[in-house]
Image 1 (spheres, rainbow, N blue to C red):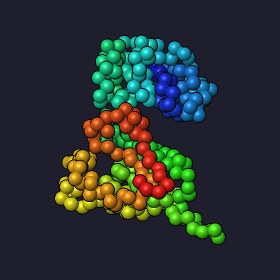
Image 2: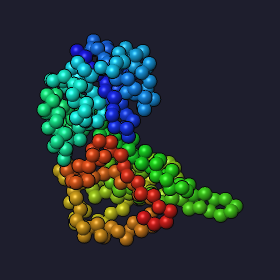
Image 3: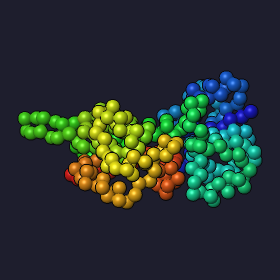
Length: 281
């Protein structure tokens, strides 16, 4: 059996689907591993490290591979390189991308969407949504801090006092909790919002203030599966006055299957969005 690690063709994608440590584990199972040249460069993993781990670095790595692993769904230009019947494992971002799915079906490959892995205990080590969302929450705050152009913590000097930045985190899932923790570590005053009542305790345990309009709609805003329901325009209007003094906001959650949740950026990389402002939000 041959497993191929494909290089991502999206210039904005710095990740790679395997590391030298992963290659060693594959080799221990007795399979051949091939890596496309430069696949790990943007992740700080040169070809030499893959070679040292036992992989073969070749431009034709995916040509006759039984399994191809990627970060993102293969583009049409890539499908021609895969043999019919190959298993392609990646974050497929299937919703709203019918043409891309048809192209994969026509090419004869079998696609495995990692983001649709059941979120159960046995599958936690393969949960790409949680692992990437955790990093997204951290990255969102770091990028926002750079764009904000001012210190996060309160600064007291002989010249005067600079108040701490006020950060508002919208959505307290895996990414949101990490965003709260990161902003708090940087010294910001953090407020967070989520329509699920159960998240209030999680927010407060991290030292942040929980913001919500606790009416009847709020009490019934969580599905049986633990996900958030989309709130009405009336509820959103009730929240608006409480957000007026925020310096910066980070959004990292979306209602499952909603238009926002189906956007490629949300599904593929889980990157949170930040809206920095020096005065008001």
